[in-house]
Length: 145
Image 1: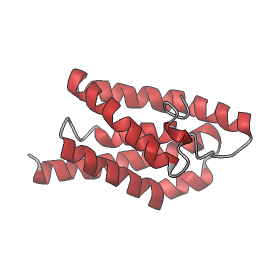
Image 2 (image 1 turned 45 degrees about the horizontal axis):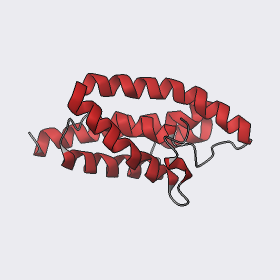
Image 3 (image 1 turned 120 degrees about the vertical axis):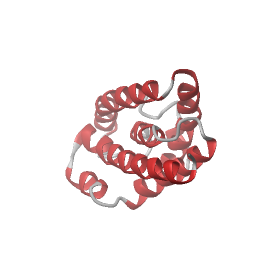
Image 4 (image 1 turned 180 degrees about the vertical axis):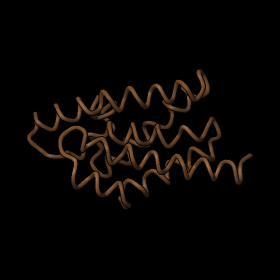
């Protein structure tokens, strides 16, 4: 689970691969059951991810291993809550989340530096997902409604 179906084992940019591997899953979920199912998925992955990331990081004795991408899965799903089933918004949401996850603006960077363990691994991506979702919501309402 921590590697999101092994996407985190990509030799380069595992976070980007983890985010990309989340897109089709969330799209199918949104088309099939709607945004409430995506919200439930994001919450479940976030909660389980705290435990899974903490357990896996301790097992390999690395603070925040790059191959743990369940945090990207949670954050990407949170951003995509604003996308509905619009494929253009999925692409924009993907780019937004990756930009926020990599650049780590406040409070994302603060959480990354100051919160430890599984919660620390997850929280910066959850915050990036929330910020990305808010931005995507405004983009959707301004240009896609």
